[in-house]
Length: 310
Image 1 (cartoon, rainbow, N blue to C red):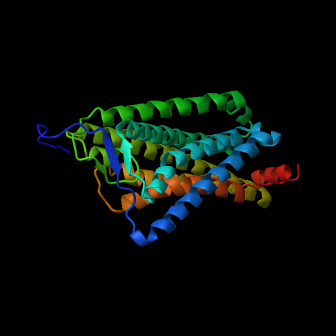
Image 2 (cartoon, one colour):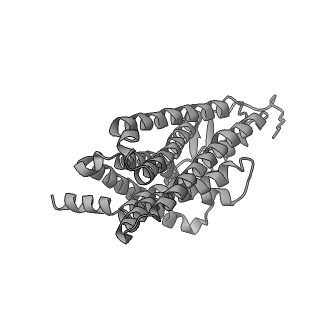
Image 3 (tube, rainbow, N blue to C red):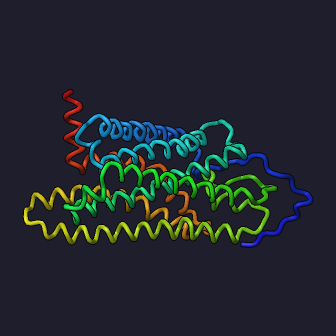
């Protein structure tokens, strides 16, 4: 998308105004309370999962639950990057965010979000090995290798976040400075650039949309093999336990990837649905993760019972 502006009368932007979520004024207090409760529950739920995995010897010795603990840690930080700013938008305080603050928020969101994307793929790989290659599982997924893979996911996420933040804010921003969104994200910020954003939109499409879609397809492929292997299990109890463990992960993956793909494969879109979809994977998904993993995972529920009884 090419943009031309008379930059001779414009000035360099030093801050942005986040317009936030569109809402009726009479619902401002209710929405403030709803998002505040969601944020508190998200932090408490994920902290509970993190402490449970750390404190229970049966869980923190297994790669699957190491990955779950890392996921909870990511959810806590991802929620903290986005939700407090949403909550502030429902108060009389200023909606201004500094230029540096906008850069930091965009980097942190894409760093944490892409790390989570890679982590979901590792979790699918872990389940694939455990169910389809049980004899090789201790070799291909031990504690040391799991740590290396998690470190690789964090490293790849930091590179991704750096690339996206650098490409987005290397462009000149000379006014206006109103971001029609509830946080600094690439599509909303690019609309304010005073230069051609074609390269940025292409990189966004490839680096985010295609990578997310590819990871999602790899996960679906892993689970297709897992389902095929589960159906071969002779005992009904064995099938039930396998489906319960994998079902929780597949549910989380679906509610995370589908909205992401919807947003970033349509980088130039200005659909009013974009805000609602983004709220789902930035606010609701981190809240659902601990609920899904505790309600559908018998081992986590057993660990919570052991902790509650000392």
